[in-house]
Length: 639
Image (cartoon, helix red, strand yellow):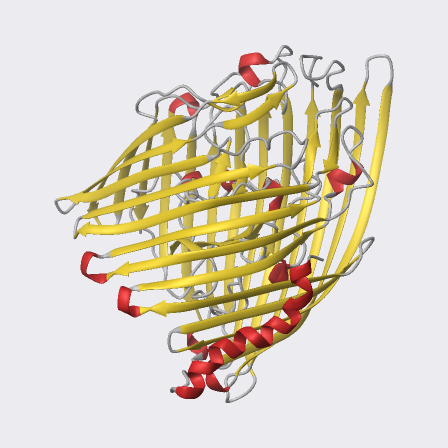
């Protein structure tokens, strides 16, 4: 534990005392339980967005089909970068503020969907989510282990598939584009004496950008809110999905540089269910919560291997792997509003992960078969407190974790913010700690696994200045942050190639996000992020993530039925590496995307998206080219 972590258990009282001072000299604000969104957990189990570094990608009713495709939800979020979703890679990886893909924890309807049997430690793909109909996406930046335990090193992405199921709606949509890409979706929600429910089905085919590359998937999402007595709230969510993909293996050099032209084939399925229940137990606003979830995923892969090259004189042999992951999570907590604007909670949680993998490695003159079968339990206790007094807000959290095969950990979070109404702004400061157990793949894979890996740790410092200009309808945020990672698990190309713990990695940066409603029919948004990444003395540069990104998005209405939009994005330079090429510095690139939608009535929407209208040539990874000019047409019919 870091030096600062040792004093944070006492800092909870100090931070709350800072907020308590103005409450003692002024009127204390009461707590309205109806304002709390307790069943949606991203940055905290308690309401307190004035302190958290949270970003709402969207919430509630979506705009008409003026967004780009669903995979682009995060493409205009300053701290999020998705690698590979618009290229010949065949998969995508999410980086939050420069952290590794396995450093971002993803929740879908409260279900942890991270897969520790995958090579990145987090195989969640935004492309697998429905491109329409998702109710909301929240991102909480910084280490979030005080709330979620193992996994939340760089941030938390929380996706809610359904919102208010009492609001009936039914619609179908379809879309198609170049290279044979298409998708269809169906969604219906309704109510009855039994309660309210909804179902969403999506099937997609990513097309054939190259003959060797293809991605297909299906997904069904279910929501059910049973009719319960007053004072009770019960929410049941579930999903099932499968996928098939063909793509060049990682480190192969992709379609441009791979010597061996055979594709790696992957297939699998996943499913999960969550049950969230809340009971009002006192007239003073006390609420008892129970939450449980189950997640299961299977994956099969057959890789042709990679021939020897500049970086690795041995190359990677042909291999096949079958893996399975099962995860159970159950927790309970009690929250209570107190006097002087304070809210507190305390609870406990149990998590079990079971993973197995059978592998076969073909070295040409002999075959090596391997199997690992691992199980671990994580037991946790946690507490949180926050409060709002006049212009002040404060937050504190602590969590104790005990995991199989690892030492116990104390994880902390503390935040303070102050409103400055004289200048229409708010200042926020935040510190948090993260903890992540090594993935099963990282521990037991026969090619690159390392059973001696230690857990990863992180510390996050954040400060931001939120600006509100009501007269001009402007909302803007300027922030600075620093994330320190200790023992970050990363790939060492060797030879021999192996996953290793790095020493100390520091990523710091500046972030800008602004939204301006210039006129009633014209909206302007801008974002920017600049990163400084220090991999540690003697370590190679971090791969995959750009040193800067910024963008401009303008959309508006033309008359009553037509809506248009223009988006310009710039992605900076990235370091990467492959076996045939060795280390490579990928150049920066810009993209321009246009969109036009026609909404002749409340029941019909049609949209045309022109991606990369300049046909800009770029690589997202070494040898994996981004899509060139690519039109996409989609329609939605409500009934």
